[in-house]
Image (cartoon, rainbow, N blue to C red; front, side, top):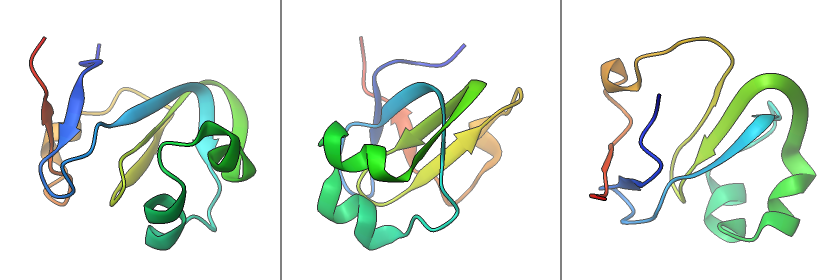
Length: 83
């Protein structure tokens, strides 16, 4: 399970997630900086993958397709945004 209210402390942006998608390998910082949170623009680099989840804020992104502890990734600054 994952918190559905994640917030990034680096860019102060809400973390969006998309079920059954992963991010294309060509994604970079500027892509997210320029296109978050506009789903129509983000779709250009989303790849359909059953059971996966794509996460992103304005400065970081991750594709998850197996059980993963995001707290172990030091470069991510995502915290619960309080419910």
